[in-house]
Image (cartoon, rainbow, N blue to C red; front, side, top):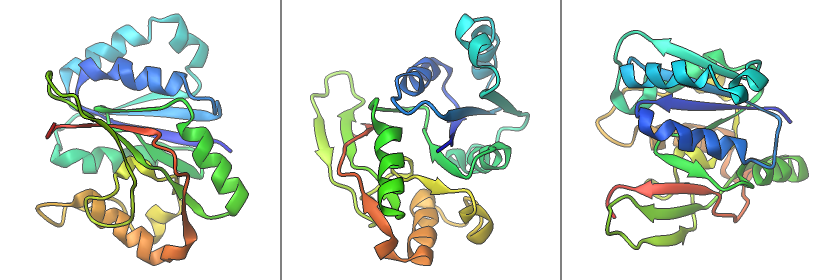
Length: 205
């Protein structure tokens, strides 16, 4: 199963970590799309990256979309652009301040093939603050503030069926999008890998 990985890129200093997360995946059938929200630092990172051997060996599946106007708003616009640029029927989102365990894609894809349902994972919570010792597992559920956008393996057709990310509220943009999908497809059509494969760097800790 081929998977499109979409990264809304704002912070150039974190993109090497994003790239390493993807490179370490045990599931190898992917494409990676960086969507730049008009950040000069991200452009400079890309200019250097395309000179590397790794890029030249993978340039048929690593792409860069440069949005020339700063849209901000928590990556809503850039994620929608990434979906439009993607080639495959299944998608995942990796925010530039998170990362993956090496088995992330494999566990999602395997459970999809095994059950035919829509798989999602648990969270591995770590603290962003320098003195933080937070390092724990969060069992996710389709409840506001109990699941992250990056937990789910998406169907590309959902963006035709339910629309893209909407700038229609002051909070919970990601949850609003997940909720439309979850209730639209039916709660019993989702299944958890029970693996904390998304490393979520939490700003509160």
